[in-house]
Amino acid sequence: MVRILLNVKQRRKPEMKKTYKIEVDCANCANLMEDTTRKVAGVAKATVNFMTQKMIVEFEDGAEPGAVMQQVLKACKKVEPDCEIEL
Image (cartoon, rainbow, N blue to C red; front, side, top):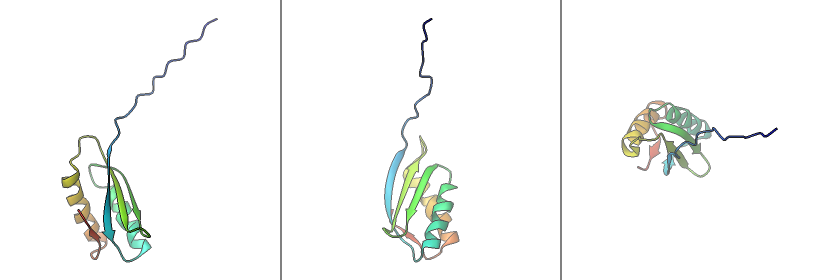
C-alpha cells in the first residue's frame, strides 16, 4: 500500500506590515485604539504597545495603507480624542 500526502493548504500572500509612532496617555486608551483599528476596513491585524508608544498594522492584500491609516486615525480620535498617530 502506498500513501501519497498532498499539501493542499493554500499559502496566503503576506500582507503589508507597517509600524507607526503613537502618542497615547494610558494603557486602557491604547487597548481601545487597538480594538478600534482592528475594525477598520483594510486592516488585517493591529497591535498597539503602550510602553513603546508604537502601533503595528498589517494591511489586507490590495489595501492602500495611506487611505486606511487616515480612517484608522479618524476612528481612533472618536474613542480617544487626545491620541496621535504619526503617519
